Length: 291
Image (spheres, rainbow, N blue to C red):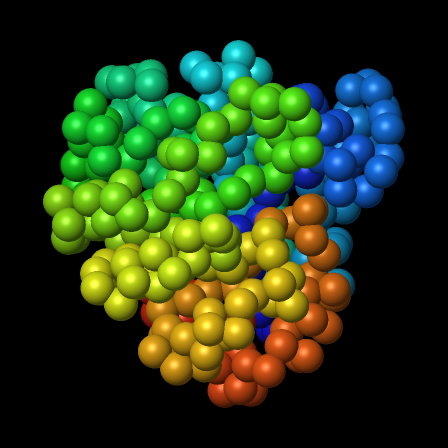
């Protein structure tokens, strides 16, 4: 096994329907490809095709769900679907992080418990910019209390997002929700028993994320959605030093392919022993993976 990918998205038809508007805009902005939503939907993969890609890359994946219905109006990807893909492909996937929409209140808390206890998912993933909420808003504290009770980690998107990038008004997406300090810092202070994972490189607030990682031992980070060639030199120094035990590998698949990321990491200047921690050992320890 070359790596554990702690942040990969479903590319199936059901998942594609949840993000059609954003995927269409992203294809145009990042790749110059203009398609209709119907054409974007036709790009969906089967779960078998996804699994084949992970096996070929010698990567074990952890998939993340999607539910931002209240803010976006787009239908969620069910946690049942996520759990089924994980269950059907143990050769490719180690588990999944369920998604619940915090604005659903008690329903969100119940769904979080169902996803963990009944569906066997391993944690929860949140995208604050798409879901339009601050993690430190006390209206959502019952959800974090339930996560502590369940003993599961939570992932939070940090930094900018590809959702709506390059469009007028960013398709209504607000970046303010995904700043590490004060929002994740408050949460980490108020819930010291909660394992919090900041997703992505956190740009333009990567220095805030570094400070948070160094100050709060219950906070960790994964690097999906970015090639390391775009990391600042100061951030790479921290990875080679103080952060080498706090950071995990993620791809943001299918946005970025594993082959490209591995090639860029080999050229990144990170020490081989640090890369081994980032690729495999940190995820095993932080997520308590028995593999």
